[in-house]
Image: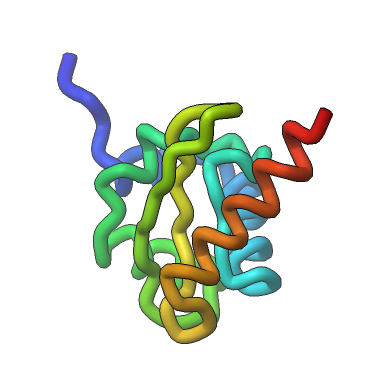
Length: 106
């Protein structure tokens, strides 16, 4: 069975989970697969314009969404979807570091 595309995964999520993703993006300008939004990294790897459009249709009000990732020894690869009108790639990676540190602090 082939892997589902990111847009298929988004469309398969319940409205409550989509609302959480949209609220996170509208509030923080970013989300990661470590934000406890039931969105796994494999669902983020193939992010494209159709995904941004789908979230816009569901209340996302920011700019173009981009994907960036970084490896963290504590958890492995962490992906960030971020509003490129609000954050640059360095700020998006800082957001990921903050989430990882909060979630996995000893």
